[in-house]
Image 1 (cartoon, rainbow, N blue to C red):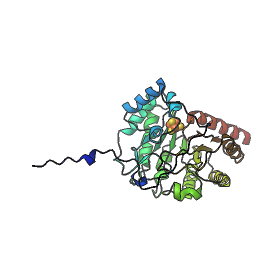
Image 2 (cartoon, rainbow, N blue to C red):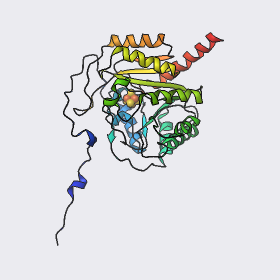
Image 3 (cartoon, rainbow, N blue to C red):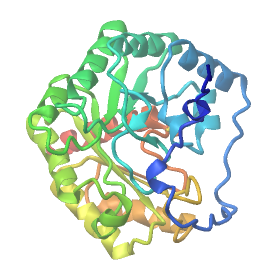
Length: 321
Ligand code: SF4
């Protein structure tokens, strides 16, 4: 008898099989103004332990976020629900691509328990894209929101969702669960969509944000982009106008960093004064808040920003009274 050992089955799965055939792109050296804190603190280790013991996934780790040392020291982790495998294959993203696993019905309770244990006053929940599900994962998002509300009613909840493209009724399910902040990132200017975000449609994303406000004006809306992907300044300003015409409250702008030589190259490192200038222009266009710096990420300082958002809305309401 011959025994055949299938060693291939034990081989680690490539994170980005769809990118394997692409030519290597030179990874540019980061400029001096991009310096991050090493993930070595006691707080970082404690956050890691809570995440692992609840069998949860974070976008901080999966996306290789440069702020993980700083955020996790303060116990600010962004949970990524519905697994660690995404059905899209964006050219900038480090989250693994492939066929996702079935939804985990126990996940909402575990997320809620972790939020309570970490003592979070504000939590950010994101997910992979689940184009394989009939509702794109909308019901699961709603269940996570409700589980957190039940466990820690004082915690404010921010969600960062996929675009629910071609998922009729999905957005309504998520909005009905009443998150405090609804974030959906445009990621880049429309001229880059074909190469950077090929599975998405720019005006669908704008419309999604607009629809959230129509359905529930009390929910803050938020969107973000990365710069350094070859966009022109006038395109960023036009995108700001598009977001404002959808009544978006808060915009974030950060430097794109290339996860590997198979990902989209960094075309330019934008200097800090250009970020500052985007922030100034954004405020004049009517956003309640604009966060713009090389290391700005959607969920970076999200709790502090939420307090600022609330104060800015209050001030605006008083002015118009
Ligand atoms: S910025 Fe967001 S994704 Fe990055 S480490 Fe902080 S919480 Fe995680």
